[in-house]
Image (cartoon, rainbow, N blue to C red; front, side):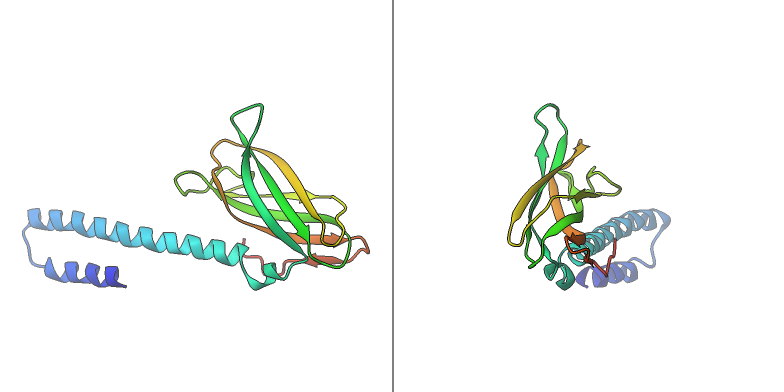
Length: 170
């Protein structure tokens, strides 16, 4: 909010000047606008990740993601996704579909197996209640550094019933 007020103050202060002064002021205004927009975009990105990967519906899912990270491939310079999850339900699970979002070292969307930092994978392991399982997907990421969020989207139980994430934003 302070940055927006600062922008308006600069606009009012620099309203009656010569062409040279106006050009200099335009560069100043543009740089202030760029800072404000970067802060807005950073906040929007964090908010999007929070809503996508850390909400009540995901916290109540029958599967809990214990960890999800990029891991180095032993045979190349690329990275893969390694995910540990736990069955926190009272039923046996036969399949789970996951989605994740990753960033590179610059905090930009990484090559994470999909588009714009997003990726996903499916596990068809038999998982008993309270059992923890590790799964790896060969996504061959060239720039993945950090997984910012990971969630289950669909869980299929042995009895044929299914849990699905209802409020998908992305």
